[in-house]
Structure formats: structure tokens, C-alpha cells
Image (cartoon, rainbow, N blue to C red; front, side):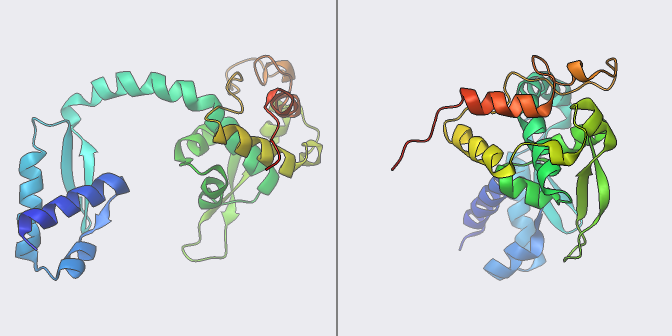
Length: 225
């Protein structure tokens, strides 16, 4: 295969991956040496130069696309409001899953949600709603997350056992996701800087149980096949 064609494949893989991809994966697939691989990267870096909104970087034997640092402020100005609008759905779904399944890893959370949860996990940790409680005895020793005492206090729960049935909650999440809607669109993430009262835990609701019940009552019912 021509160098230019391989460069297209590398370009596509990096776009779909979103993360760094090991250089050896490409070299092994196409039986390339360092010089041939570097030619592919040169072609892509020429295309994604300082005049492009996307740049190609190399680090720790990996290659990855990233945004052009010169337009970082403009990207932030546009993306932050978009992230804020989706923040409630992502954060509350994530904290609910952690509450029911703890201790749980990030990968397990994302398997249930079907979406990346890095941002939500970091937000919830910053708000002291979840915390690292250990490491799973598995390959890579991934971090395990659980809820905090502050979670119970903020959501007006006496204990984790006070939560609604887990399977009922997940059924509602799946139904509403399939319809392209948000389970918790109207609720705000608790703000640790607000007065520490249960009634301010979720806007328009007093605790997580009421929020979940309201979502279940207002969501469409599944139709029999």
C-alpha cells in the first residue's frame, strides 16, 4: 500500500479513537520501518499544521490528534456552555450508578451508561459526592469509586438502602436514552458552596429518590413488542 494511503488510514484511526494510538500498531499492520512510518506522519503533520484547527502530536511512542493551542480560548468559550447544558444528565446518572453498584470502576460505569464518564466522575469528586475507595483486583488495578457521607447528606438519604430499586432506575435510563432525551434534564448538580440544606440538593426536588420517581412517572411507558 502506498504511503499516502496508509497515512489516510492512520488519519481515520486517530479520528475515531480520540486517544493516543500506539505507533507499533500501524508499523506491525503495514510492516513498516521507522523511516516509512515517519513519512506517513510527515504527510499528516503537513496537512494538520499551525493553520489548521487540529494538530497531530507524538508522545510516548503514540500519535494523537489534538486541538490547535492557538485557538484554545475560542474552543473553551464554545464548548463550556455545551458541557454545562449536558452536565446535569451526565452527573446525576453517574452518581446514581455509583450509589447502586459501588464499589465500581470507571469502565463499569461507562458500560452501564454507554458513554464516556471521565468529566462526570471528576465533577462528582470535586463536589465530594463520590470518592476513590480502593482498587479492583483485576488487570491494571483500576480505581474503585463509591459515594461519600456528603452524598447522603446532600440528597437527603439516611443510608444507601434508602434508594429506589436499581433495576427500575436503569430501565427508565435505557428507555429515555433510546428516545434521545435526558433522565434528569431539569435537575441541577448540587453546589458545595451553597448552604448545606437538603432542600437545595436538587433544583425542584428535595432528594435523589424524588427525582428518580418523578422521572419514572413522567417518562413514556414501554410498549409490548
